[in-house]
Length: 191
Length: 113
View (cartoon, helix red, strand yellow):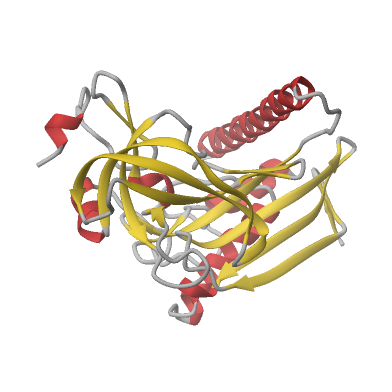
């Protein structure tokens, strides 16, 4: 039991060290970007820690709950700044081009809102749920926002759970707890 | 003021919001100031869009989880307060009914402080 506790402590220490290193690396990177832009503003990086309302362990459950399931490419950032509903938190609204629709009728483009982003020298990063990357392709299980200031936008189900990176060869990368068999490809997953 | 180990808070803010455009029911951030005094402000926000439909015990599960972050605990999986999911598969509340610190959570606090 004592060794298990030591292992727990060591594991947490390593985890906290990793988080600290990640924050430091992000700060250095952002600092370099700011300096390259000709300003000496020091970025302020804050890590957000979420409790997600719902977890998913299978793509079947994700597909059942999703309003839309798409393969889409992130083409740009529509808006970035304080979340209108929760102004102390930043939100980034990504513009996506839909390459294939598996469920729902999202159209040829859609906006996916994520918590986190950069505004006025402040960067907020969500633990375990990195921001989408412009230019990358994703398989996304999405919930549409039906009311409030972001009505019509989508967000990813279960935070990282409903998002899979799609590589050029069709290989998939899971961001959440949905485990995929080794070498799972898009074609093997889609109906 | 909370003062121990890595944490020296001037203030811990507890807020609520109603935000239908996110998947989180609770959110915490720690505001850094400088290396000698890394965190001076912690803000915990509960999202009424979800927690408004929760029982008091389930809300406590979310609040307890977020307060764990205030004390610098990171996410863990399984039957622990720091499990990041309230419901669904292998979740803190709907699966394991956790709304108070477990032995693993306490070990984490002891390891930090």
